Amino acid sequence: MKAKPYIVPRPPRQERAVLVGHARGARTKREAEREHLERSLEELSLLADTAGARVADVLVQRRGAIHPATFLGKGKVAELKLLAESRDAELVIFDDDLSPAQVKNLEKTLQRKVIDRSELILDIFARRARTRESRLQVELAQLEYTLPRLTGMWKHLERQAGGIGTRGPGETQLETDRRLVREKIARLKRELEGVERERETQRARRRREFRAVIVGYTNAGKSTLFNALTRAGVFVEDRLFATLDSTTRQLVSPERDVVLLTDTVGFIRKLPHHLVASFHSTLVEAIEADVLLHVTDASDPDFRRHLTAVDQVLDDILIEPRPPRMMVFNKADRLSPDDEAALRVEFPDCLVASALKGSGLDRLREELFRRAATRGSRTGEPRAHARSHVEPRA
Ligand SMILES: Nc1nc2c(ncn2[C@@H]2O[C@H](COP(=O)(O)OP(=O)(O)OP(=O)(O)O)[C@@H](O)[C@H]2O)c(=O)[nH]1
Ligand SMILES: [Mg+2]
Image (cartoon, rainbow, N blue to C red; front, side):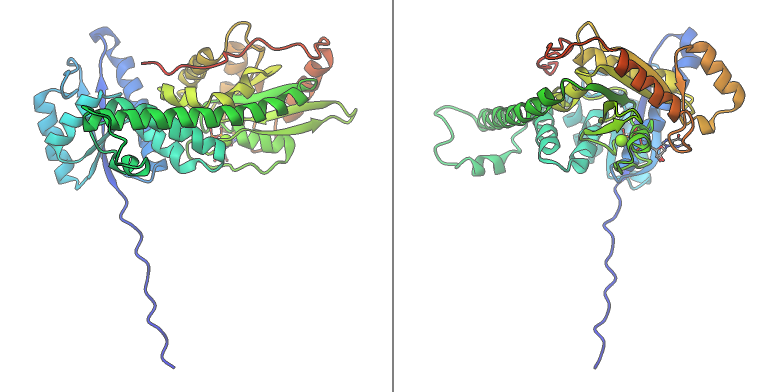
């Protein structure tokens, strides 16, 4: 019998992207600005990679005001067009947020898809969302992001909603589209509220126990630390946003004391505010913690900016008084003894650890159980750290 010819499946062509960065800032600060931009673009390139695109080239605009219609000046747009053509790139990704009009104008001139950092992050979250809750959260964030950008491309929604009869008298297509999206947003919010209520019941049950919640920049090693402490087997990857759903496990001391440990979604610079808002039900875990374990990749030359970015997101979701915080500098295996010593001088109360090699974990565990043991009795007392709701910024 003749063997069937074996057809090698061809992988879909990876999208090729040109990244665009813009350096502002005064002359005196130029060196610092340049470094900042470089790091930001490195991160954007990591994000693009996580989203499955290949970076074909990078274009940087130094100085110059932001053009209201096209973000970049006319000459720079022309340069970008040539670059994208010569690199055969079908996608252009801006490191800064673009207005809906800027995207539209740029796409028209460049004749290719144009997205910004927020949209890229939303896309990654959409790919990574696995549970019902995270899917709802991402979809809500995407719709909130899309609403002001609607230009009549939501025909399929109209069909879903029944088409005939959905259009009120005198309503334009765009108005109909907007109304449909708003209705969908309201529906998703209601569904999420249901999920949030379920979680609330779970949390109420845990309220008597001491809760430690891991927060930190994406890729800091939060899940690795969580696994090392609890042997839970949470997904770990050297890409961004490996974790979207929070997971909680018990840590039990030899004396049978219990600490509940939670792993959460990572933060990033310029995290789209819609995402923070719609991940409220996940982040509420962090909010109601007895202690936050702020994990940082100490081997990243940019870790200070990461610390600030995480603080900013926490500012958005927490109100005073904030839960106490323990700083954990991770990836110590990559630090020289000098680096480590300098870190301990700069952050005297920090813990230095390597989740991968297991160093510093005993101290961390001890510290957690010590705090759990010395906590005053607060059974049943409601914790007032959480904002009940985070409204997306306009
Ligand atoms: N060298 C070294 N690598 C580590 C250490 N801890 C974690 N990593 C690596 O860092 C990468 C990211 O680890 P994760 O645990 O997924 O990081 P995360 O903070 O959970 O990331 P997100 O869920 O994406 O926010 C993985 O490749 C880990 O193997 C460490 O102590 N030392
Ligand atoms: Mg993780």
